[in-house]
Length: 232
Image (cartoon, rainbow, N blue to C red):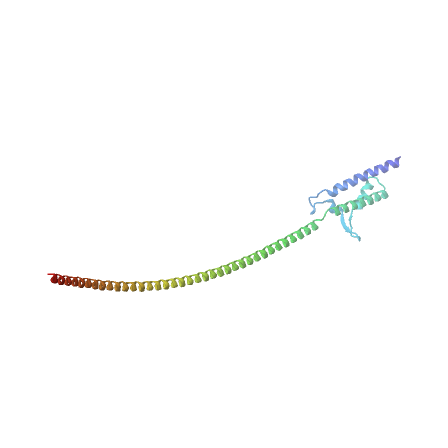
């Protein structure tokens, strides 16, 4: 019965020491650089050959504390070994669950590098597309100017041809009008000459008729006078 009580008391003291050790382990220190007082003083990291990290504990101080509570040396060493193993496993799980500040900084620098690279790629792509767009715009502008000049040349050519045809048509119409005017003038002159000829012929015929009438009247008068003379 006394042995059972002693074991229970030893377990309770060990649990108390372990809880006190954990509180001291995770309590921040005002003088430490990384924010952990007892952790930085009593625990250090060691890399095992298999790649895992073993956290070293000041087991001597823990054994002395257990012995001061009345725990035998072997039990104190066994309890210390168990606590150290549990602590190493717990801290190993914590180390696997969380990343270190250096790894976070490395990841941040990698992300910043990737972001800068992405920004530079986006900027270069935008500049490339913008230059391509400018070249396409200049090419389209040149094609439009070329088409405009060709269209202007065709319009000028058609206009010049139409003007030439119109001038030729005007000249032809002018020549035809001149010919018609000349023919009309000739016809008018011919008609005038014929009218004058007819007038002259009419005047001559009139004179002849008058002369014939006068001769006839004179002849009739002479015959009448001769008849009267014969009768008288």
